[in-house]
Amino acid sequence: MLWVLALFLHVAGIFLLLGAEFLAAVQVIVYAGAILIFYLFVVMLLDLRDEISRPRFGTHWPLAAAVGLCFAAVALLVRTDRLASAGTVPAGGASHQGSLAAIGMALFGPYTLPFEIASLVLLAAIIGAVVLARRTAGS
Amino acid sequence: MIIPIGMVLGLSAVLFGIGVFGFLARRNIILMLISVEVMLNAVNLSLAGFSQYLSDIRGQILALFVIAVAAAEAGVGLGLVIALNRNKPGAAVADLTKLKW
Picture (cartoon, rainbow over the protein chains, first blue to last red):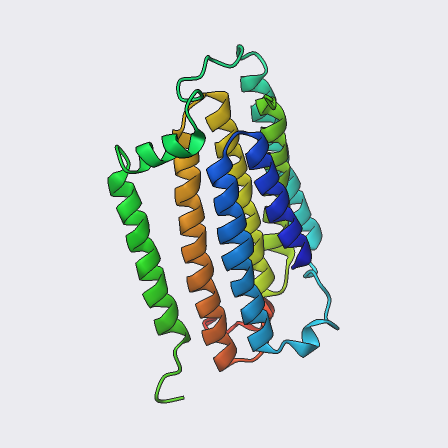
């Protein structure tokens, strides 16, 4: 789990380098702060003591490695074919104002409906998680 | 400072491959869900890279929605893990054969 935290923080750093400051902050707060703590709570609650002694990967792991390598290779090939000949970076439209202000204007301007739908998805996930994890009267 | 888009997409592709490998090869259902998070992170990375490359804010907006859906997925997935663990202790996916005919 510690390495997943390292991965999330490094991705946040790359977001900063890409000029997406708000995305980096959301990455640290939501991923490293909320989702990872949630996973750690579940690991703590489940008491998986015998999981340490069992093998880490299934017996089919070479097949899985081949599939993963194929995915990465296809993505790399597509990248070099299409984008190597692309021109220079087009002159920025929204780069003179801050990234945060631009995101806020876009989120509450043309993207209000998807924003509200995302909040609805989160509400449904909260209710679904409570219903799933609730101890029923029969058990 | 401008990072070339090719490097960002290469890192994203490698990260996605690692996520696919982890999802397929892991035996623990919690670590499979973590691998899904790794894949979503790879997609977010390429979205942010395209957003910078095209100087368009929409890539970051889409990455924000992906993060929201990832949070929802983690909540429902871990609720399912807890419900499964109540029926059958342990988190190994090989043991979950109840729905097999």
